[in-house]
Length: 198
View 1 (cartoon, rainbow, N blue to C red):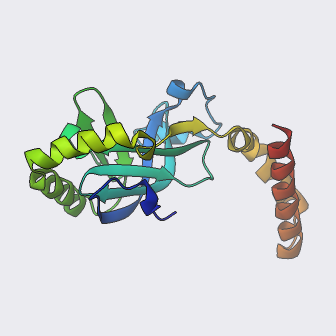
View 2: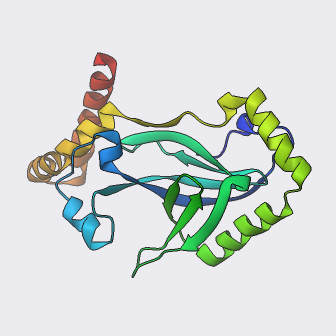
């Protein structure tokens, strides 16, 4: 899940990468709540879901790239000149930041928040007016490098919705690690069949 440097704009350099979760409202994607969503509200994420992935800081932007095992997958960018604030919004054990622009708020769960916020602020403050203009021109020229946004993974959504039932059935059937391995392999095969059927 490392960053593909072919998506970098001219003069862009990777400064830092952190394992992270992007938090979004499930209603924004028309997704159904999962059976264990009550736990999310206890952690301060009522009606929200966290997408696992990595948050990359470059000298131009933040790039979030999800891993494929999410109900919503993809990548998106937040350009440093658009950021108004980055705040530590941690609650209890949930370590998170909020990145605000003029039009949007983004939430990310990650560890090492103080140093990450400092790195974002430092990169933002280091941008010259010429670089800010260059970024705008690079984006116009290479818009496809910005990211395709987040999209619903129909296969992972189906699996997530059926997961509690599936896990219970697997635990009932599997009496030893070898049977569990065989069952998990069958589930992988079913996922591949469902993917081919779309």
